[in-house]
Figure 1 (spheres, rainbow over the protein chains, first blue to last red):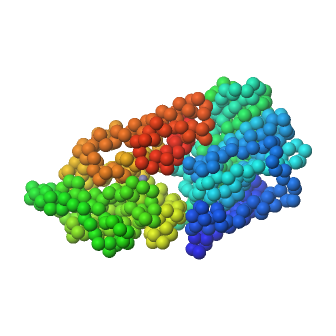
Figure 2 (tube, rainbow over the protein chains, first blue to last red; figure 1 turned 60 degrees about the vertical axis):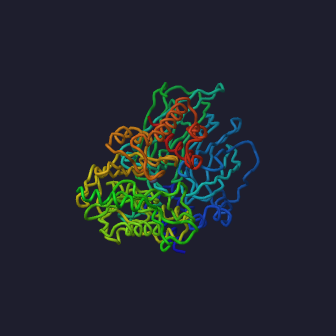
Length: 286
Length: 317
Ligand SMILES: [Zn+2]
């Protein structure tokens, strides 16, 4: 009983401390949905077996009564069945290059803020893979929903066993995290397939969940995370992302793209405190 | 320490070459669950925790904790992983001496080392820790009570009143137990961002906390590079024996740290090679460090997590 009250307080604290930017309003609305994920006294196994699936409610909130097509090869999702670290769970989305996928929504059903990220994919960017790292707070389904240019929705899911990833404090070394915040790095990789290129954008940021109370100050540590990100090459947008607290500390986005646009990569990120981090990367940097 | 005291300690050492076995007054009866305590050097007593995850069965008694007895007072080093473990340790201490427990030193924030704090605070001890311990433990208090509650049970976790240090150490601090001084040193980020060691020059004994793991796979909750970078400085401490945070109660210094260094260097080398080859995190953590697998207990439990944390750190190099 005491634990569920704590959970409710946590969510209110998150709401009161977070800028109600358009992108985060949805996350906040959804953060009240999965009551099951806040009943933290039970073991993860108990929670998983007792909790009612959050998906029907989430699905309705996010997509209304639109049809979600299952079992297609249009989108696939890969994540470890059992995470080695609940605060850093790698998730890979694979997109069928022959389809005009414009948007992918990544949902971690049982997290306090289930929508981890929404990716908007530019026409002609040829994105075939997108990998990031997320926090997982309880045993959960992870859903990916792809929307094509003609407005159809395709869904896939996988199950991840992990617990405590959102409640765990972000930085192992907060002093270093504060000093390095906003630093960006772009790596480029060789690929085995012609016509497809691969790169990874990394951003130093605590991406703090706002779910921990500081026992020294007795205040909740404010949520502080990257809300918007845009990645371009040669002046043409490849993709952009609206993100929330489920993206891990030091966000990483590794992607395969088909654009043959020359020129430098450019990344621009905005966080909940209005900080803007922006950087251009030389064409040959790895 | 005077010569007379030393003789007294040596006499006590032989008299009590011992395992203080208690009738289970504080630890609930669980068969042979007596609270072990060994005098590893004159006036230096260590309790060996099990090499295991915290559980209901072991009540969080998985870390080595101990104390040093001076002419006037006692300093406790870490307080155990639950209130009953702290109580059992204090009861064992009281079998050895009735001198006041003037200090409790927390080697770092982890629950298996600090969840018994309140027992010693109530007994009058001043709690001492790294300058970053209050912030680190403060930010994790709720999380630890919940996550550790899943392991030792909500009743035991619920009884813990997270007790932060009264005094903190930024660099080095000396505490006086009467004729016996201990040196507390604060380290840069390594096992955690709030590690301290406690050195007893009288017996050349080093309480290393979790800066030294033996048998139990080292756990990285700070910085793999910070840990490796400070290993030479750790080894240079003029100790003859070390009390590792996990492992035997005492081992020769500095040889005792060598297996840990090999593990950390192997893990770092494997991950750096993977990162240079463009191997993604998800694949790299499957193989990194695996050549060390047979050498450690709890390897499968912690290696993947270590590899994940170290990958995320090393890819910024
Ligand atoms: Zn530790």
